[in-house]
Length: 197
Image 1 (cartoon, rainbow, N blue to C red):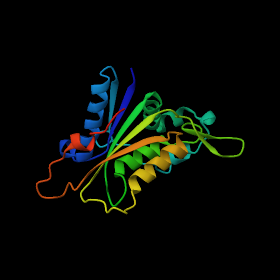
Image 2: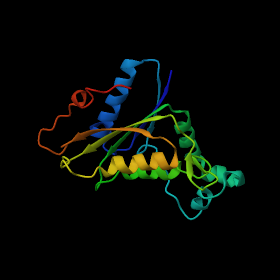
Image 3: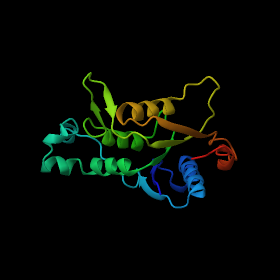
Image 4: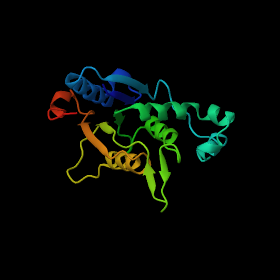
């Protein structure tokens, strides 16, 4: 049995195409192995707190120096770190906002990534991620369609963050595009026709 973490970051609820695609990915995984366990983290219903003058200090403190105040201010952050640590597969749905990821997803990443927690430095001061051997699936929805030579900012950004700050290098992207077109009807089955977990 594997643990699947489903990250939903769209504010559109059941009308969200990124949620529809990420849910379809999870359905595909469960069709191949129904014993897997799924944990859902909805970043709009349970929004990550933004860093402020008080909490930002705790994020840059060495974990060995955490105290009771640290535990209080890092409560949400510690919860999502534990969820990622325990997950074998992470499925992330995000709409494209101005070529980037959704605001709640960026806030989640800012809560997740911490020196000494998700990564450490080796003797040469290279970052070494602590969460290797996990699989990430990205489900990206966009209102328009990408030009053939367009840069995929979302995939490039998320792949680099996970590689550099968690050690996760196995990141696969699926896209649902053209969602603003009149009469758009998503065909998740076609998008995932070659899917295999």
